[in-house]
Length: 342
Image 1 (cartoon, rainbow, N blue to C red):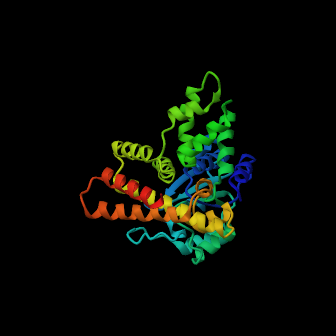
Image 2: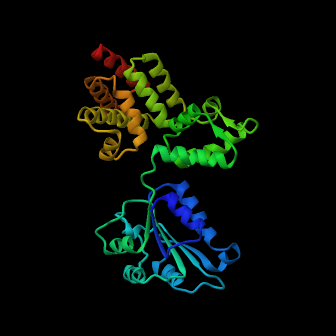
Image 3: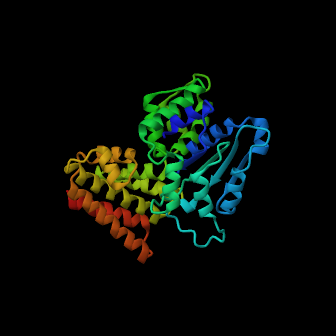
């Protein structure tokens, strides 16, 4: 079931006995939790709602609650957070003994007056486990892993429309670029954009540029474009700015290496006829990053991308094995790269 369909279902009060939510999307999870809570009248929530963290609480305690009849109400709501026993995550250090057999029995015959919501939002579901196979059959599964650019745009516009705001297309594009399409980060930025545009109710590109800081990934994306565009002065200035903002040279270099690796992989896959969606699926990368990579590599030579990538690998070795100045290393890299591709 989709996120939107679940919200619609819950607004109508048509809640199922068991739900399984996967995917690390804090904003969407927060919205879903609020929608589930709204199913229980506020005056009944004290007695008929509970949330259990599986990192600290035995599963049996949550199941006992789920099997209890509602107290002066029609429904009981139980959240089971961080259900790591459903995933491939390794929690051998945990001293909590979870009653998995008890859960399987519950899932075979869930309490009809209870709404039990499992949140397995970190790691991947371990489909080899009997309990995972059982819960997939018993529960409404809501996958939040693949939140694409189109859905993010729609969610932003819905949020703004509810507050009677609008956003210019260019402003929305810039917001997505600066936040790396991180939905939670975008939603955290919206309040100050609304405040700055309170009079006009129209968020423009200038406001976004002034108030939304570039992420390291966005700065590195600009840095990659400067390198590949042979804009040595712009590249060196941006690199120095990142150092001045206390970004670690090794971290900057690691993100640069990662970005060039993505560009090389995207270039090769494009040559082999892969679409944006196929590339994103094959590389397990957010489609928006692939979209930007495809735009960048169309006019770039694969040999030049490889040269830059190998040069950055050499910087990484030097940063780890010597005490050479990072800015000097980057400057030497730029000069060598420009000489090799000239």
